[in-house]
Image (cartoon, rainbow, N blue to C red; front, side, top):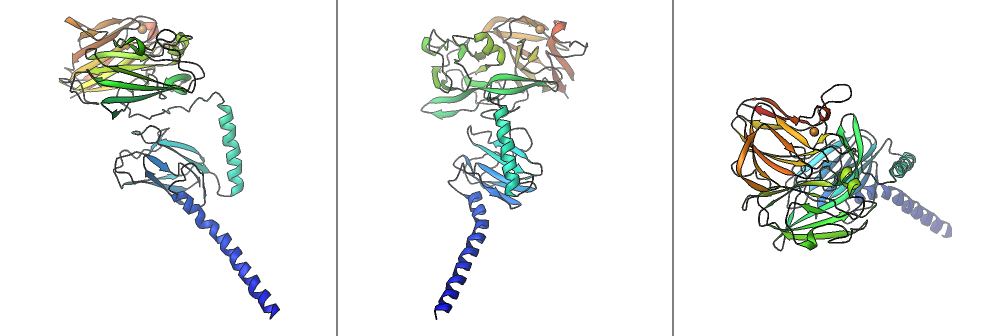
Length: 442
Ligand SMILES: [Cu+2]
């Protein structure tokens, strides 16, 4: 009897042990579908893994998979999201509610992605070479080394905090949310690698990971709140250049406010009273203003007429582009911090009326010349000129903004470039630097 009892007991133990071992398998799956477990990383041996998109978050936020795994994202939210790789490797584009997107990860590595519409909605896929725990360990050591390499916390090339949608002029448009009658924008001052062209990668200090920072586009009369987070190693502020705001909102460090310390946030609040036109924002700290501007802490601020919707082209125009010219030692001679041939090619159709917001953030004059057509200077520093002047070259001065208008009346690839040849030629004599192009098609 006693012997029999022991037999039963030991077989029961065996069953328990077996079920424990087997239980490990589904537990991975559970964590891949976990609803609340947003930060936990899970090791997955499956070749298919699901990630949910709910409450504007990816769940799980981080997954570990073996190479060859297909990851499928599903949008469980009522609003559209995207799954957009920070390096441009994959992009779901708009995913309406209920839609799915899949991508097969064939190469080991760490893949960061986000939703272009929702700042902070980010996720990571860590792909290991093999699925064994041993490899996982090696992988995590090597990724620890990578983060040690970037001790100064410079984010990878092409990443932006908010991942704003890119415009044809290579700028990002900063999204906002309406809160109690205010358009609320978020700017994050951070360190990021920036690619000036295929041969030049530089360290930059950027708003939301891009230089220039994302374009803030508002309507005249809008009430705006701009929340600035400082992720730089030193204090900063943001000055609203050309916009007449109350003194407390001026953003001059040590004068109208203290510098925003590293890790801190500051909210600017004002009504946009300035006329429709081109303005900008840039850092204006008590200390090291020159360095901060040269490192890339600036962006365009465009005011549209009242009643014009966000993303809409200025009424009466078919195309609207913003170009920031710069000569900072960090980036060199650039347009939107890009050097030819990486500079934007701006599309237009024959007959289009084109509006150009031209801003000089550099410290030199740049006479910008248009081929094939003449333009009118409509306004300067946001103020409309009493009688617009027609010209083909406009000498832009540091800190000055211009609004130019022209009719694209014949097809062609029409250069728009600085006419100081040292700013458009490299040391080998090749075209480089401050050259952009309007591509006018029939
Ligand atoms: Cu120039």
